[in-house]
Length: 461
Image (cartoon, rainbow, N blue to C red; front, side, top):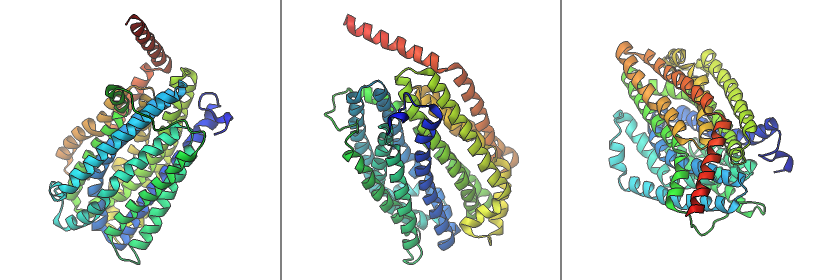
């Protein structure tokens, strides 16, 4: 990266979008691949197969969230060290994070593989969908370790000033997924198994491309002999705990919503919600890309103690997320028939009707969820995991689950979905009020005081 785009000195606007666009483009490529997965499965395998993927995805998400917590928490700690001009400390974090991820991912994959039938039997799904779920998950499961390692490199490559390489890897992986979908599902007729093979093999290609990072002469992160204490690594991981909470609680909420939809409308209701959820996923992926770029830049400026730049970068994140939310909201309000038709065909009039009914209740979610994602990203970037965790668990589980129970008990129909934007709106107000108190100047002053106390303690010892 050129000197004019240094995270600590460059103009915030071009710097923000220089980091944001590769991240957004790469993550959009992934979401596009997932959407095309849904299109191929919905059109060539059927609505039941599309519903099956949506039913198993929360469980995959929970596994993925463990890796996400470690990757985000440790990569931001490494970024802070780089901002403090301490590449050796950043490399220590890089090495220990890799070892931890390999160990945990291997244990999770091995445990589920040896108990796959028992694991799937815990899922209460209609009998007709169970074969689809088994065929998809048992193929995808061994590739989870590859996916987690790819995630690891993606975050650390970005924090080491290589956002374009990280984004290019995601794009190549997504394009591979789409091409393999077209080959495996349609001409080879592998059905939902083909979708699983396409996803797994594309992750291998993505990881191979990311390995190019180790051939970049100016890279600052290296594998070193680990010397740091376990509690320091745990502290770094804990900084990403909001991502774990988001992943687990989001997954639990999807399971609850799927159960409610099956009870009210059957598999076709799950398929209709899946189509709308793809639009929400695109909006959230773009917002996550914005938050991701903002985190990388803010954490380095936090390490350099530059409060004014933190303000500017945070404001850019909020404004852009709001615009994306409005565009996404308008798309589901005015074009629900087109959206559903992309996935399961316009002949499914019941699915289209259900999607229109659902969109009337959930549309505010597209704005509030983006703002909340930026707020959580800000707290994570300034190393305030308690704030980000509280906000994450409130918006993804405590508030929506409580309100869903109440609204479902009152209405006994799809209007209970109004609980989702209502819960997210309450969380948004709480997040914004916390941010007003947790100003960059205040956080930096607290950090300086803490560092001074540690130095004095070490001196006395």
